[in-house]
Structures are given as structure tokens and as C-alpha cells.
Length: 437
Image 1 (cartoon, rainbow, N blue to C red):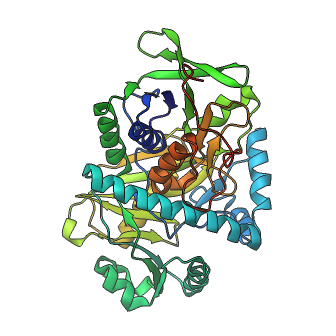
Image 2 (image 1 turned 60 degrees about the vertical axis):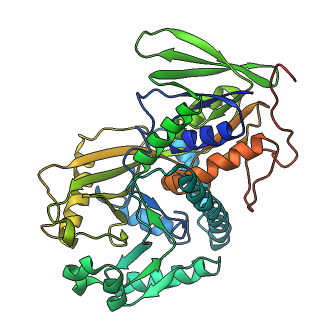
Image 3 (image 1 turned 90 degrees about the horizontal axis):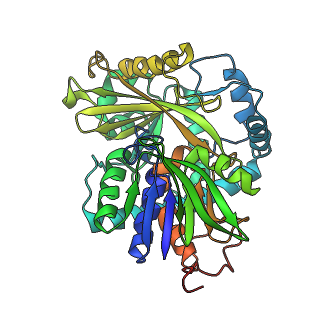
């Protein structure tokens, strides 16, 4: 069977890999010149199965209101004349209840466990190296109030079977001695030993190379223009080469859209409405002047809501979310404030450890749903169209499992996890080649 996968980030490439394992003929289309050059390029690097709380909780509206006028706030909401933004925001507010939070946490934990197991098996099979560190994630707190809230959050996560351990000041420093210089402002922490970190871009690009070795065709440098529907199915996807300007129609038996924040616009002409809105995130990657003094365990800084991960002799500082449409500008006043805040905070925590003369800043659009739960499943508008999008800040965490799960669904099998898949997949028949249908 011929399958076209639209999007070459961690989600699209993972999906392509598992489809190839099933023996399908796969073509991957992406507008960039290589895999993982957009949302998967320079994220926080954390595989955070046990730190997967949804943004929407009972206290979120108050926090967002408090941060509204601060350019360096962890979550920045810039109201626009954009119906999609307002629809997303209103839906987000409906999820800010204890019941919704508990329900959403359970789904994210289920997908996270399935995905982590899938990633481990994939790495064991392929031997891909990507600056992987399997030493857990340490969440530290710089005030007693924040620590008390962290203890309460840990109790909630433990009720879902998550191994999140509460640490006092000395135990935090035992896990990560590099925080000793900041110890007077560490009140405690929580620690999840099963979590890990690694470079999502490196992993995705190496997996893409292995897909090509297995026979996958990659059409890089091609814009996706639209889907052509014939009856109840998609007959082709219109694409155009950026190099030549030449447009063509790709025909296939099935199509997968894994285009992150751009997925809703592609599906809207079909009458399919996905509540995905881009959350602009930032990161700074710095070379280390003193690698021996830098942190090794992947960190979450509760005060700034940022992730800090070691990638060889570099450090990645990532975080913040900005709901401001599809803006990827790194030169605006707001962007400069947010990028500089990442570096400034790292210097506060680990003074003199990183080389601040070369700051590699990045921004990307994380495809966020109000629940933080992605859309994985069959389209409601076309029988041979499948969706794998809306992973927000957890694309790296959920990438392998989302790709594997969708390939299973496409084969007519239900993945072994308790998760609400998009569309009526429980009774759906597997996709078949047009030649044999």
C-alpha cells in the first residue's frame, strides 16, 4: 500500500518508520530541506513522561491574568483578531477544572508510557545515538510556596501511578551537585528517575536516514498546497517544489497529516476543524566553558518554567509559551526579552559555566490543544486520511508512541493503551490498496 506522510518532524518521521515496518510504500513530504527543522529542531530535549501535567488547571486563569502584561512571563497571551485564538482560549477555560485536569492527566500518562516503551525499543533496535542521558528529570523550587505546590502536584501524579519523588534541599543537591552554587535558593524538588533527555533533532534526522535506507521516498523542499477529495476519500495531495515552482499531484492509498500547527488549515477545506493553536516557544543553546561544572541531570526550573538539558558539551535552555499566532520572528522586542531571559536565568543558576558570547537562539510553534492531548486517528471527513498532530510541548515525549499507535490504527488494530483516539477507530476497517479495494 502507498502512504504519503505530510510533515517530517518527530511525529511524521516516527509514523513513517512504523508504516515501513508494516511493509508499506512510504513517501514523506516537507517544505524544509531536511527532517526536524521546525518544531522538532531545538526543543527542551526532555522525555518527560512523568512531568506531563496539562496547562489547564484550576489555578491557570489566575496565573495567565497575572502574567498578561509581562513580556518575560512563562505563558504570554497576546489577544488578536483571530477567531481560532479565541475559540482555543475559551475551550482552554472549560478545561480549567479539577475533573478535567484529572481526566487529561490520565490520557497523557497513558500515551507517555506507551511512547517511552516504543522509543526504548526503537533505540535498542537501531542503535541511534542522540546525546541521550537516562538520569531522570529534577524539578527544583526556589520558594517554600512553590515547593508546597510541587508536593501537592507530586501527590496527584502518584495517584496516576507516576513515580515522582519529593526531595528536600540536601536530596536535590545529591541528585544534581551542580546546583550547589544556588543552594541557598533551593527549597526542595521533585524527581522522576525514569524520565530522560536527548536531542530530538539528531534523533529524528537519523531515523529519517534509516527510513530512506528502508526505501522511503523523501520530497524535501516541497510545499503542501491542499488535499483533493473524491467521494469519501482523498485521491491526491497537491504539492509544489520550492526549487522549481513545479506543482504536482501525489496519489496514494492513504494520507497522514503530521504538520503540527499547520494541520488545521490543511483540513479546514474538508470541513474538519481541529482545535490546535500554535504556542511560540523559545530556546537558547550555549557551548559550555566549564563542562565539569555544568548540570547533567535534566532540570525543570519552577520559578521561570523552563527546562535545562545537557547535550554533550552544550546546554539547552528552553521554555515559555506565547499565544500570538504564527509569528516566528526572533528579532522583535518581545522575542529578544524572552530569549535574553533564558540566558540570564541560566547564568543566575550556574554563573560562568556557559560561553555567553555565542548564543544560538531558536523559536518554534508548538501545536497545542486546550487539553494538551493530541489528535491521533482517522479523519471524520475522509476514510483514507489520518491525523497525527497537536502534541504541544510533548512532541518529543510522545513522538515514537504516536507514530506507532497511528500505524497500528491504520492496520485495523487498537494500540495497547487506554487512550481516546480521534475518530471512530475502534470499529474502523484497515486501509487497503486502491488496487485491491
